[in-house]
Amino acid sequence: MSHIVTLRTQVRDPAALAAACQRLGLPAPSIGTAVLYSGKAEGHLVQLPGWRYPAVFDTTTGEGRFDNFDGRWGEQKALDRLLQLYAVEKTRIEVRRRGHTVTEQALLDGSIKLVIHEGGNSTGGGGR
Image (tube, rainbow, N blue to C red; front, side, top):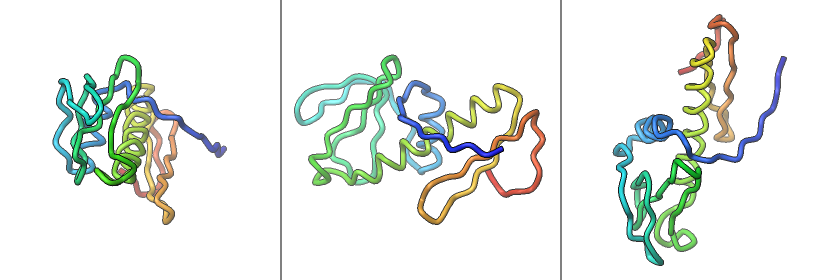
């Protein structure tokens, strides 16, 4: 049975955030306070490529704070890709926790298809 799921991502899992950073070849998030253009933000700091200021994620509230000045200080697609991979990694963690497996397929439009196999039975289909 196939289901389409739409996610609104809140970043609450430091392990999934670190895994997403690793997949992107970024340094692991650090915990601290970032000075952004218009204030400070505390949490898990991720330095995205080409960004003047880090993106900051408060895993207690799930909120992310960043200042890329409408793309002038960093491309939005870098943050979007991080959030996409965070959602994939969080899903993988939860699927494994429940004793299942997941396969992953990158689609031509840039989206990622995840297939969950109940009970750890994976047949065919390349994935991570």
